[in-house]
Image 1 (cartoon, rainbow, N blue to C red):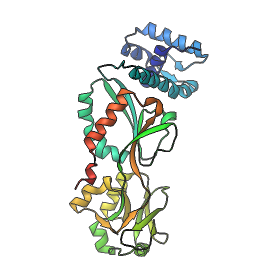
Image 2 (image 1 turned 180 degrees about the vertical axis):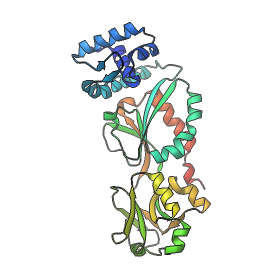
Image 3 (image 1 turned 30 degrees about the horizontal axis):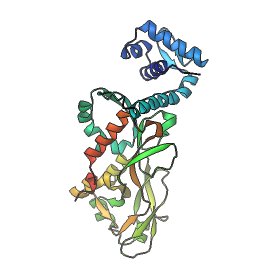
Image 4 (image 1 turned 90 degrees about the horizontal axis):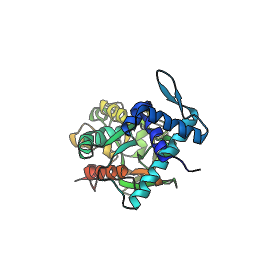
Length: 305
């Protein structure tokens, strides 16, 4: 069955806007033409993709299931045209980007005005959570992840190593003392990431390895948001493990202190921008990746001496 690419494009736009007339206008179609084209696509597929009423539209269950594949079909078309050299001088479209809320607050949000000015025909839809989401099922073009890419359906570009450190506020350490060796953590209060795995701490001075969180320490707070973790640590709740990119400014200002600086987390984490393989040549993905790396730098700004 040969699918109507323009009908699929219209469906994706209507699903994003929840408005068939507005979707049609964005593609240069009159409302009646847009409605007719969507009906033709639904007839071809043998299923209703959108529920229509006099007041609003909503995506049907079949439409929800078809939407990620529809986005991938359009991405494949873009990739094929790019491979043939048929790229538009104006990069356009909506970029659906999933990322850590903490990283985005610090590094993505501040650079958006310049990106949007440089690429006025690109719109960005941000899905911000420290809980990782499935790219293909969620219909995302791009995501920021802090692990090595293992999913065979994804490709990625590494931004930087994701070094983790233990830290605490000066007022907490004044009250409870500075740990000198890992077993001292048993006497301290910890902040931990909710459902996070235990991490191996390895000494660069020849000391024996240990685990964090320490099994005998009191875990006073657990949360699923990195910004909250950092702020609570600054407030003096206890000792936490944070990515260097999240706390390097606080370490410079002195509002946080590096705890057990001779120990490093051994998990080889890195920050990646990952995308479905079918999106590898999509112009909007490519220019956003290049822009993020341009602004964060190689090496990354939090590693700059």
